[in-house]
Length: 113
Image 1 (tube, helix red, strand yellow):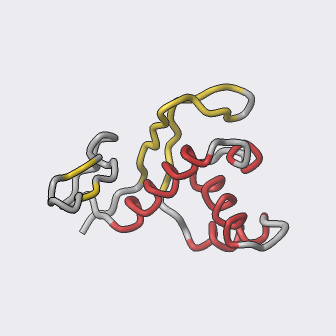
Image 2 (cartoon, helix red, strand yellow):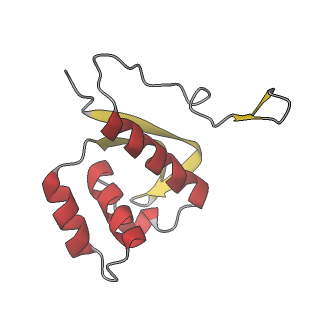
């Protein structure tokens, strides 16, 4: 079964990367070496810092930039990372940004966004 090799992460508002604003970044599939490199990069060795370093490696952007983003933008990286690591291109189509938003069922059974 073929695996997705990368996904585009689209932000609601531009984020700063390398001194300029971008509306999206490409995240590639994680390699084992990325986990090792992220642990070496992280100075505090916390899970959060290692994850930010991992996203820096898989998106090929400076971790210092990621650390200045609003958390809502960081959540987009997390969502796409999970999507990329748990799907195959053979049977799943990447959802649009609107389709990937979380919907909650209300107590009356009606869906709320």
